[in-house]
Image (cartoon, rainbow, N blue to C red; front, side):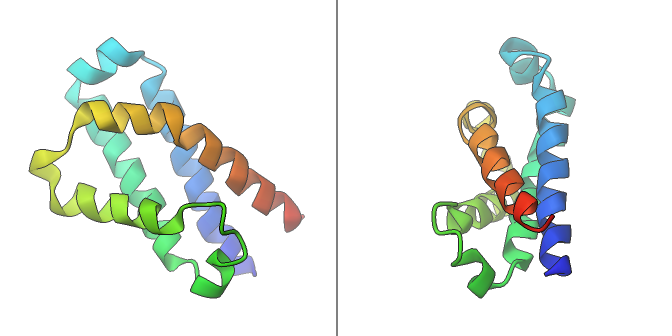
Length: 111
């Protein structure tokens, strides 16, 4: 289980970085490429960490959209020229806070 905790902690670390990047506000975020690039990189890390979690582990937490998270990583990496920054912003505002709660809940089970 220790390995699972490492990947879950990577997700939390990436989320915390995203939170700091988007704290500049929507207008600054949407007009500043380094905040966008940094955020996209952290979303990629979240997706990659998700892919490293074994299927039997992920199946214990079906309320987390693991496949969508991993799929987002694939889209960001393979379709980088077509990334919609407004969609990235929306993900940081709508999906990331909930994911953070869910992952923190799982991590508390390991304590």
